[in-house]
Amino acid sequence: MSARVVVVGGGITGLAAAWALSRPSAAGVVDVTLVDASGRPGGKIRTERVEPFLFEGGPDSFLTLKPAAVEFARELGLGERLIGTLEPRGAFVLYRGRLEPLPDGLAGLIPQRVGPFLRSGLFSPVEKARFALDLLVPASRNGTDESLGAFVRRRLGSAAVDRLAAPLLAGIHAGDIDRLSLRATFPQFADAERRYGSLTGAVLARRRTGRPRAGAGLPMFMTLRGGLIELVDRAVRALPERSVRIGQVTRITTRAAEYVLALQDGTELRADAVVLAVPASAAAPLLADVSPDAAGVLRSIPYVSTAAVIFAFRRADVVHPLAGHGYVVARGEGTMHTACTWVSSKWPHRAPDDYVVLRAYVGRDGDQAALAMDDGTLSRAVLAELGSLLGVRAAPTVTRVYRWPEAMPQYLVGHLERVAAARGHLDRTPGLVLAGSAYEGVGIPDCIRQGKEAAVRVLGVLDGRQA
Image (cartoon, helix red, strand yellow):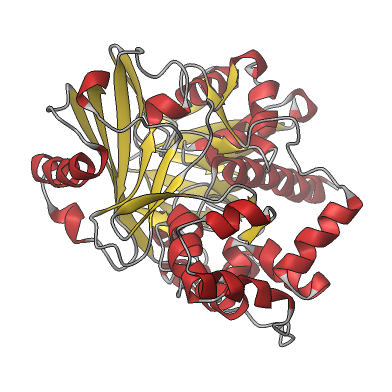
């Protein structure tokens, strides 16, 4: 008899887990059911066709330095649909009301090309000299976690925090750089300091060895020609027939040697194992009966809300050349939006040549006020900021606001210890597995990897029971 596994959550993590559990290698072993409450699998992936445009309301791409997303697309037969970014690939930082180009050759916050860095208007001569002190600053040897901001400030100075790390790194998490965990967000920095004594030392060592980066030969960011929804749709179609069920799981209990999942419609599902691929805030109440200790830990993981505001304009109505992929906003600029992607300059097949599409991001830890505005007020406020900066001379032809309430988990200092504690509590209930953006990475490759790893853990538990 096949083991029954229920995957709760139809985002990309849950889809990857269900797909891995349904592979031929598990045939005859696992009967998988994916339960999704939204009625629209894909989670934060939201592609919308608004002719003649293609909008992404959630993530717009994935990082190829982490190979899981590219691999998953190819496994699903989407290799020929993968596309990279357009040239020129430069980006800017909004600082003192001006768009300053990011210096060419930055690697892990460290400039590898001296000329562009020395010519940059982002930093004063003294601030540029402070970067060089990275080679002299002693490495931390206490082994404890610290905030990302404290680490960068210690190694490179406050200017690097405000104009590089906060907008570029903390911005990925919509987080406060002085609260985010270094080890949970950018463990490679802590590893570089431990192994080489400094970030600069790590860059020099990599240049000496000539080791290619992961994803070498590919653009740093990729997506699919028809939007990220192609990944979702193909993953759903790859699952066994009738394995996707729309419903809200409200409670998980145990009965004999199985898990019983109560659904909002009054029905029940029984399972030998469960993958919880939902936000920590949603997983916590489901675990209240079977593992109250784990539930308590998950409740301590905070979330913030964000929104994406997208505008389409006729090209003639935007003065700025938009030669690049967009900009991030330095800390302290006082704008409502935190970044803006020049979508039509970054990706092909998103807008006709005589139009431009701009996508602004709103919301971060400690700054949620704008999200209380209604869509019209929010879009007008953001448009006023973009208009003065980019020279917008007419109203947009299309506007869309995509809201993501309580959607971005915050990896605060000590996050990895909290995740380990939650999973430690669940060790007492084998077959209950956590996966998703709340734990080990918020990007699409991180979530796909976690989904597949959750499937491996489940199969290990099931094999152990059958042994």
